[in-house]
Amino acid sequence: MTKDTVKIEAPNLIEFVFEIEKRVQEGYRVDDTNEGLPQSWGPGLYTCTLSKTVETTEKTSEPESKDTETSDSAKSAEPKKTTRRTRKSNK
Image (cartoon, rainbow, N blue to C red; front, side, top):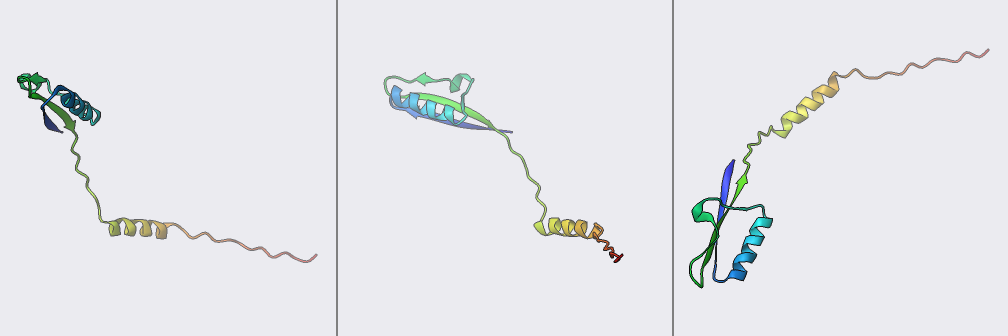
């Protein structure tokens, strides 16, 4: 699992709030470290760090031809169905 972080910087409060709202809808959360908390640096700079945990999984894929060969051999291993015909005798 990896941690994806985004730092938000905005020149005014309304843009700052909208940017945080957008990122929260994408699954980010406010970082709980002191430097990551929302802060105002005077009248023209708002900052915040958001983070999201991303799961990384490695998929092992087999070639399709190998899967096809397996399914063909499984089909050939099944016995063929035969029908038995009976003759009606004329009585």
